[in-house]
Amino acid sequence: MLIRSWDRGSEAEWRAFLAGRDFGVLAANGAGEDAWPVLVPTHFLLDTEREEILLHLAAPNPLFTAVAADPRVTLMVTDDYAFIPGYWRPGQTPTSHYTAVQFECEAQVVNDAAGKAEILNRQLAHFQPEAVEPRVAPGAEPFGPRLSGIRGLRLTVRRVRAKFKYDDKVPVEQQLAQAERLAERAAPGDAGARAQLLRRNAARGGCPLPAAD
Image 1: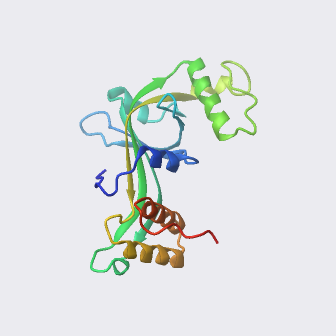
Image 2: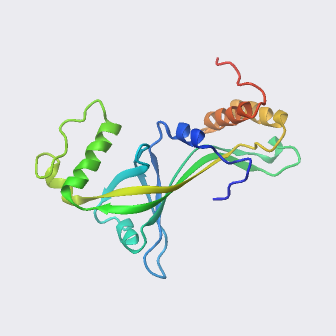
């Protein structure tokens, strides 16, 4: 992912962006010379204290074969995206606005029942805190006997790369004009892209964020 100096996101920005976002695409190098990269859409749990990511997949998932050959993986989360027509950018070409966060990680496969149960219980506590019982315990109903059908993944984060692509390099007036056009068009994703554009602009000392309606 190419990150220009004006697109680079800070740690505070990407952590704020990920609050409430826990679904991405996990990529691994294919095993063998003729293999394609393996991409898996998945929910995940980011542990900000341990700087690790936890998830589980079905045991036959081809990603495990790829990880056995090369444990280096990348998890990517993308959102707040919108297409920007060329006529919204005087004298320039069309472009895309988006936020993308990449976690470059080293993957460890978790095969033991206790380890898989721990991952599942932590995921349950995150994704359905209103109903975490019954907990997963090896061998115990209702979930324990099904642990053989999954494998866990523990991803140690080695580097985080964050890109907030919202035309930070163009004059403030052009950015604000784009924000108004996004509000008028109101297509899926436009509201999120507009909010990011205005937030980045205000953080750089541009025009303040508009008051909420």
